[in-house]
Length: 483
Picture (cartoon, one colour):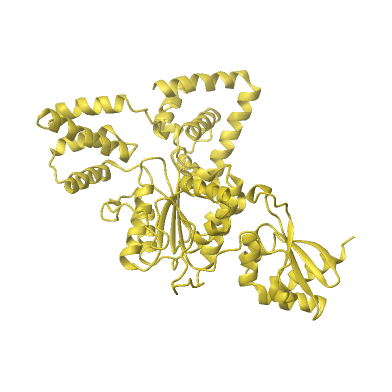
């Protein structure tokens, strides 16, 4: 049987739902739980102190009208805030506070870590600075932490990155005003995610110098949050990030398996997004493949645009190398650049590292840069670098093992033996590469990501139940790594 306080809050939600957007309702009202109703005072349980502050700041008028509509002019509202005991020594939770704009009484129990009023004046008449200090950042004049050389001029465009670069440039020239919010950039390592993130921030600062831009890695964000809990100033941590106009978070997958950090990032994300601020995040996987990230956060990542960076073709790799030597003011024979671009194909960072190694060998040994010198340097560089498997190399191994022509494996043939071999290729591509499911499917008969997922589950189930398939997998693992 529905209790009185549940009925009152249910009626309130019907009114609230009609007055705000579905996203706002799901974010700020769906998580609220009614606790009790005593003498016209309705108590609501909210997840955090920040949650309470947001409701009081943005929805107090709506709450006030709704409560009085349901409970009469004497109706009042209290919050029961769930607090983790670790956040404040000696403080048990949940605890209750009165909403001052509803009961017009002094706070019964003042909120823990009440946020600093940034407009409050000090004795000398100057604004009191935000006390939350992130290592490496100034208190008010926040340094964006951007690398100047990682700009759009130095980001070579090709078919492999055209969408991501164009979307990034649009965001940089009109932050928070495009449909690309958030902008999620994903790719395997060394293909330019970090470069593009910095380029967006630099573009924003060039057009809007007054905007506050901040580049931060997800690992830095996590460490800062842990420090804020340890120091008892997590509200200052949240409010610090609320000041950012363009937030660029690199390697977002580092938040995987960290529910408390994800929770605070979720609320910061919502506040920035609803305020029209721009959010840019990078990852090594698209949202559909991220594991360890809460569904509600993944859904936010899908609000804007997810753009991937693919492996560059030879022409693009050559253009990247030519831009690099031009910026460094050095000369190098075209055939040497072509050798680098041909030998190193899966990682732009490694390709540039080989270029630097050749220049260093030439300079230190006072030798002319020749194909012979370049070949020896690249040979050592590649040999001592772990070989990165690709969908193509895995397909070649599978084709060889099952004695099925490669073009047949890549076709849409539905013959049983071809379908089975194709499923093995998909399974190992998912296991050994960082290619997206869509990218794997496109090279395996132009299949969609759902087909790839099904193939992976099929092979995994067969391995657990059929000894013959387990042998196939064991043999292919060895062959793929040796091929």
